Amino acid sequence: MSDLAMLGGSPVISYRLPTVNDSTGRTFGAEELQELREVIESGRLGFICGTKIKELQNLWAADHGVETAICVSSGTAALHTAINFLNLGREDEVLVPAITDMGTVLGVMLQGAVPVFVDVDPITQNMDPDDIERHITPRTKAIMPVHLYGYPCDMDRIMPIARAHGLYVVEDCAQAHTTRYKGRLVGTFGDVACYSFQQSKHMTTGDGGMVMAKKDCLCGRKLIHCQDKAWPRELYRDHLFLAPNYHFTDLQAAVGLAQYRKLEQLVEGRRTSALHLSHLLQDLPGTYPQGDTQMGTHTFFEYDLPLDMEQFSVDNKVLADALKAEGVPCSPSYLPKPIYMYDVVAKAYPVTLNMCPNAVKACASMLYIPWTEKHTLQHAEDLSKAIHKVLSYYHR
Image (cartoon, rainbow, N blue to C red; front, top):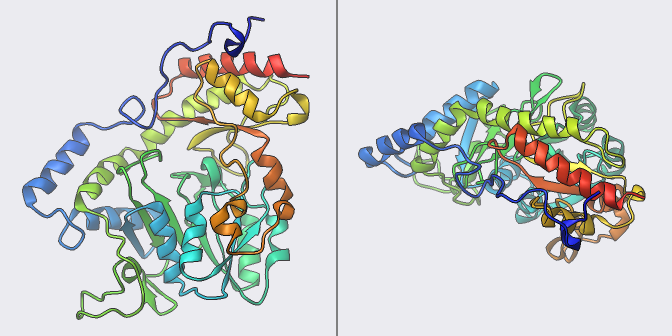
């Protein structure tokens, strides 16, 4: 076997792989430009008078079979809007997974509610249904399953628990555009669902997001008011409750419409190359290549590779550094530690390191590789060679 690049050998990949940070990995073109031109020429660029926003919202709601969908300024804003929509506040508890983006937790905290952390499946890192009920108390009001990396949570187990205890379900689909659970789109199971259009997501408007709800009015609040200062603009100037301004612009909606119309194509680009890489890694000891299962489809927000660390002589940080030397953009994990161990959370709530042991182990047992719709089969072939080279070198 040739020497590792970090030990003086030649790297497997000597070119720059596609990235979501620019056009090498993002698909923009005439469709987006045409929609933008129409907005610029109309002179209606903002949330209040824009027409593209309404078009995107109506299209999204119809396609997902819900009463309402509202564009917001980010995926984090979508999640905060959802918690506000459910009128959750001080001392109300919301169950969230121990591995997720901070945006999942922020909306709970900003409303004065309490995030309660549920352990995760050690391989998929999605919320573990077996760990949910022990956290439910009389103060629990909602569950927030996160379809992490583009793979669905086990909704057949989560939904009955929620309904049995009278809990709302807010699906975090920020990384799971068009992901399906047993043939059904994620986001259509719970009461509210949230999406992100940030630069790295399956479709993007640069920043932005969408929050949708099966019912336009819930807990005495309309969804649109929860991202518009609780201002009933259709009636009078007033503010019905405390709510932020999370406006989207018509410029963003213009890009969003063009991106949404080709979303299936964008996702299939990610899937084709990622599934090929998983196939190429099937024979590599100590790895759990991800893909479609009987439970659902994987849409690969990123390429996540769980590892059996007992089979390697070094930790995942060394493995990631070795892969980077081979030309593979790579992190040792999605999070360096479970989200509850971040200071902003740990200083506010009583937490201990091992309250979610699977999450602790999972953060130290994976590799995390950026992915785009412009990764090709050849890219997957080259990535496979690099991963085989590094992991075989350090295999016990």
